[in-house]
Image (cartoon, rainbow, N blue to C red; front, side, top):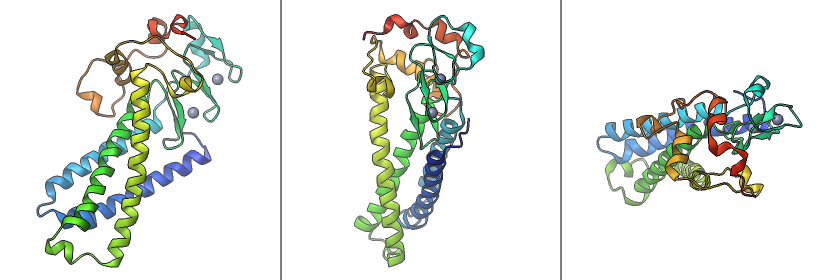
Length: 255
Ligand SMILES: [Zn+2]
Ligand SMILES: [Zn+2]
């Protein structure tokens, strides 16, 4: 899915331009200065960056759970959407930006130019986790270079051009790091209480169930290695699991 939304497209450009700049500054002026043998930490750092970027792409390009008109005969319950006329099963919402109804919609996120819904929440959460890790590592690298590093390579490379670039890189890292902390805390609350951002705003409450059940729904099954990688979740295709999932029945609404 790729939506031609001006705000979303601008956010995507900001994300990728900032990421390239942070990568350049943290490697050129950070890793290569402070580590005697930078190969191993650099490979690990680049691997986490790769996971962050691939998670972002999956969150951006995946179908978040769009409800189509041909799904209507398969749905056992729901109300018609007043905008796009499809039958919305419980916990689905219409997104005014995507102009679609989304299964278990959480919110529309301009940073991925897509809705966060039933099918791409996993990729969104992985993107947040890996971005948190890379920005934290980059900040630690800048701090180590300017506060603690006494080596020759550090001392000889502290010119004003580098300091300016590192300050700008550090500021961008701090911004994205705080953003991921805030968003991750929201997603932890969503999983903990079996809810979504939009349902919280609308003051809807749901029956509680074990956190592991909510995690399995988000990450596509029992715990396995694929939870940590942005591969598509292996669940029955929509809307079969919606019909069969008792937690999506209207009876779970408490208020
Ligand atoms: Zn709709
Ligand atoms: Zn949307």
